[in-house]
Amino acid sequence: MRRLMRLVTTSALLMVMSACDSINLRPETEAVILRSNADVADCKLLGTATGKARDKWLISRSDNKTATEVFNMARKEAVNIGGNVLVKKTALVNNRQTFLVYDCP
Image (cartoon, rainbow, N blue to C red; front, top):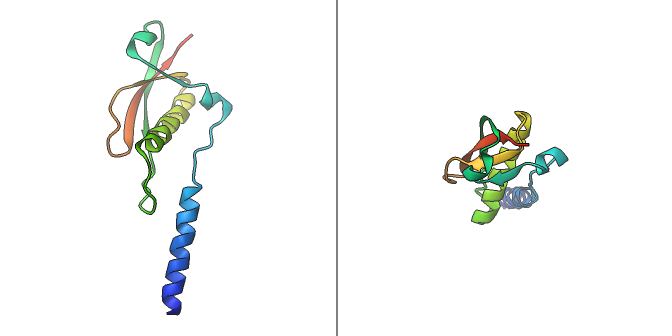
């Protein structure tokens, strides 16, 4: 019985900790925006960024929350390579999506 209570308590704690998990964005990361291919004609292509949402096996998440997490991770990568604009390269599949990174005036 004691072992079962410990397992239940540990599981509940993990669920609470997972629910509070978020990606903190720095101000320069928040400046990275999503655009379409038509909007980047005068921009310099820098490379790609892949956002991946963490697997949450204890808590179900909405598609919108997953997409936001993926986008925010890609924004961080874009800043690291000097970009300020992302364009979707692939669809969101299995909590992962690839974006083209541009530096736009």
